[in-house]
Image (cartoon, rainbow, N blue to C red; front, side, top):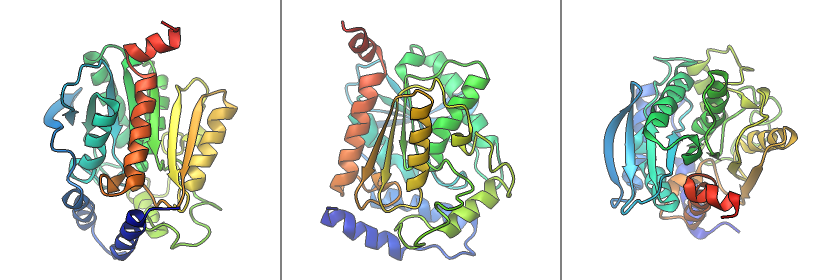
Length: 306
């Protein structure tokens, strides 16, 4: 049963619908307003850095003694999203995982269409490899299009000869740019946060109708064998539920380790609603635990039985 807080914010989200003719600048400004509603954990220190030429932020929780690091890819359909729209998620995740979260500001569409975002994320990963204690200390995480980038970045990193990270966490990942019979079907009002019209807008901005099968935008079409352990969290009412189910099935079929968590009654990326909504807090806590179990020297010792 969804909490009263979740139901209340679902109604707020449903009433904050962008007009179809909104410009990308208006969409970016509206998304960033989430940062005014949920400003993030002030105890987490924030600083700007560079990751192999990609501008980025780092979020350091108090008294961080771990050797883990999270590379976080924000959502927003490859066209919107920033540290302001996602600070509430990354600061909470930094606290829950007990480590620094790195946040690359990859180039956005339509100014920078496919494959700009995945190229920047791979470059940022390469830059983090130079700073971190090796791939076994790094976890990927991301939401929506950024959840898709978790997998796309792994696939391209592997294609480029880079080692894979220790694990990946995807919140409501967008992994199917066609959506035939899935997010294009059914009740269009079932998701309080995301609409089919928005999906179409983002596809036009980033892909211009091309490359819909490319594994760097539709990872379920890629070779999923050999990917590290994955946690996928998705809401039961959201448009992209089938994306998560399909990807989880593909990972299992490829011999991978995957945990699929379906949150009853939750909309797309309900994690934005931390700390006001219990379901958001609990989901981020589970994500933090997953990361600590798989990334860093302490996780390696646990696996080795030491």
